[in-house]
Length: 303
Image 1 (cartoon, one colour):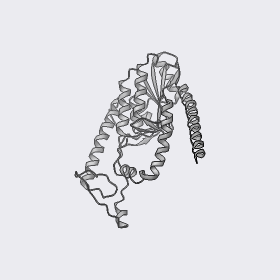
Image 2 (tube, one colour):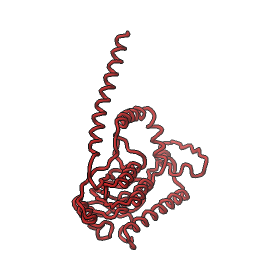
Image 3 (tube, helix red, strand yellow):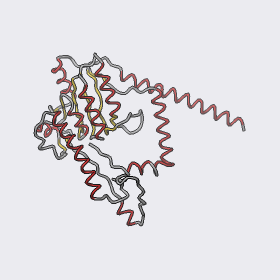
Image 4 (cartoon, helix red, strand yellow):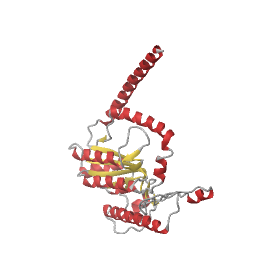
């Protein structure tokens, strides 16, 4: 009985060592991509914009924490003369978007937004804070608005004779719960909150772009690059070449791009693997019943 146990321990030990070696090689390959002697930092704003730190694995999203740190790092680097934001995002949470906007406004470097396929809503807000915006005629942009919609299941529950037993301490504690019908008072409260965020969002975009008239984009319209140019939402049609050319002309220098990305350590890689595996195990046991209920039971405000 002892021999099988010994072999199992040896096998697990060898597997662990192999994992360390693979993760180490992977970590080094990631880190090497971050080295560069350029004078213009390239920071990606890709995927949904959300707060928190992005891990090395899992769904790609634009972490406001990581992006803000990269902006601050570039701002302190005397070798970096400008920051080029590579934008490909449909927006995200209001707070995370504003955090990036504030960081861009704080930097002393020249900033340019290069919008690729999509730079809408919160991602456009981020772009509007830069000194110059370049987008393709086929880029989807605009969508200066706020959404807090959700699916309500109250009617479906009633149809199948399922009762929602409401137990709250605080009148509005379960506001936005999909398990009950929203009252007119609750709807007014949420709509007022959305309108407040929208007014702030629209006002800041207009200030960033030095616009006095919001007609044409004040109803959260999406548009292509050509229409955005006509309305003053972007400065130039083009892509990376045009963005680089503008920086060279503005700063009278030859641009050498260098990627600024969150440095992934060996510990990050290992913890990422463990967290991902733990997530799927835990999801199968309890998350489907608990975590998803919590997520659905709250209204997310997105820009």
